[in-house]
View 1: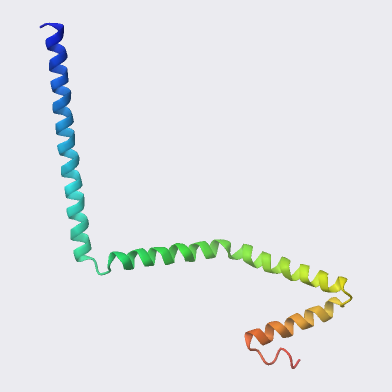
View 2 (view 1 turned 90 degrees about the vertical axis):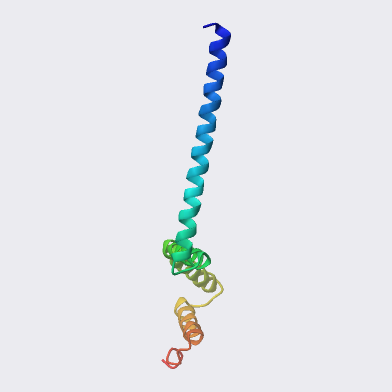
Length: 115
């Protein structure tokens, strides 16, 4: 067999392999779409509801992850405010009392200011 004929044969084989591979990919894609369509038809929840639930789950996980940092940030802010008020001539006990009463009022606790 000449060199030219072997090159032609290998090209033809490569072409056939490419066609077979494309057919296989198309069959896999069609099967995957059929499975998804069947699942969507049988699913008790719609796709949008599943996406919403997933988004809510991810948001809850994110909030759980950053909650300690939020608590630390609030504590630091409280200490900075206390320091600033103390520098302005307030006694830190007075600052704590004012803040406690304010937090009680915001929370709707009437006992906080009657103490």
